[in-house]
Length: 159
Length: 250
Image (tube, rainbow over all chains, first blue to last red; front, top):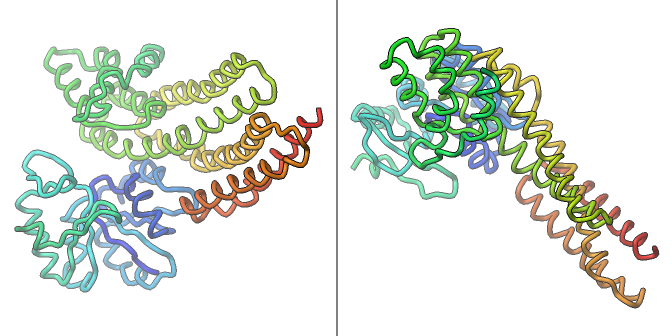
């Protein structure tokens, strides 16, 4: 009930999330928290195509999401909340808004300036700092691409 | 332009590689459009090819939506940043939609349909022909529709795709496939096991029901929400056994 998964994945709604995590958690709503997507109708339309039938997709800016967070948590829907990068997740978590929650790190792939941490996780220096910030905001950061793969804690990633 | 893009779309997987997946093929498929709209300077064309050769992925049949839309956006001189974001957003949906519709619903259903017809007495070569025709009707339609809609709608192509409600059709085709599976399973047993004594029918029938049950359990475990596996497979099984009986008497 409520938010069953908070995940950082640059691909947002895609197979690994809808099949890998979706089959396990059976969400009825995907919430994408992304300032750019929330303001762009054609991008929302494309992204919503990846949602399985009978499941909804909602889009919100970080500002909106912070306001609606409590409603989502108390909802009787199972919700998966996605952001495309650590920056969005950190801004969502500011002020202890996600205290006590787990944040799952999934797909952040190779790009210039990022270093390989795990095969599915490439981080910049700033990203590593954002993970520390998230932990300071009371969030438990865990890297795990699929429910069947081993979970790696923040201290493990930031060695 | 449309025809040249369409022909090249068939070779989009020819440059498949682990680094860019369909990226290189996408750039090659777009080449006629880039030459026409981006070839004012040698460098500009080269840069455009480089941008489009970056990592990209999609279902090959649905990649036409990307090729058409990208060509349309280059034609309309859409901002490069918007084009980059379109490439990024579109690959996920085009992949998962295509996998669900083509690989896991349409292909097995077409195989079962043509195989079933052969079991019912259609000459095997005719069975192959039926499969090729039916399967490729959708395949070619998807490629054609993708290029056409993409060129016409550009980045708004998602709206056309959404209106077609492909996920729902994938599910419907999948259900039809399950029915056919029950039917074909019955036919396979009917033609493969021909006991000389009518009393021996009990054995194969039991075998058939057990196989259906196993398939059903596997189906339920894979997709808990799919409650229709029960009636669908049962109906398929009954039809199969019924046909088996008819064939036997005949």
